[in-house]
Length: 300
Image (cartoon, rainbow, N blue to C red; front, side, top):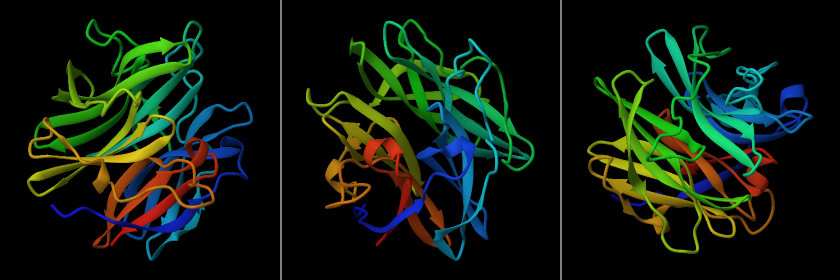
């Protein structure tokens, strides 16, 4: 398949002006809705805690925001739960009259600096507000995955099967340096997941320690994945597969890199690829994990 080249359209979601997004528009998730494209993301409040909200982009001009969530669509979990210090969206699935939000729950660490574990929330009002499906993670620790780094799920439904690509912890080198790659899981209901530690995308070498936020798109009989990889700073990677299990990593074909200057001149990461009115677009973050907001690019 021909590699995709992306043309940058600029910074489209700029945080600020609301209590739930004093800074950042981190890990954007697109939901095309005809006249608009809703983008879920996590802003940060005055205490630097991530909260899930959304902005809607004009369907005729995706560089223009036409509506904002006035309050978080998903707030903090109860004190002591896996998501009591922050929530970040990861993927949206439409399931009949329900909208399912797969998200990242944040805990502050002690011996290590953080715990990131995946949760699930459900909306019955079209995605304006979400309630947790359960108060515990959907990707908790297992004997094969003992670290609190099982997170950032991307979920596709194929008939009766639910398929997930997610971030799995490999080790903590020290308190501030985790290593994590991209794994695969399956489910029959989207809630209980069968995981055997299968690796989908592994490190390219010892210079890498983080593979993050998989975004999988199925084009005919091919699966295409964009993801973030980090040594010194995040860049976008790319891989293809015929079955979603065995992947050929081809980072040179990711199609988007840092700019010479500005908000995405130091790093690019957390891509979300989606289609709208016959064109393909990518939302992504730049410097400092989305502090400046979320940018948009279009496939050429």
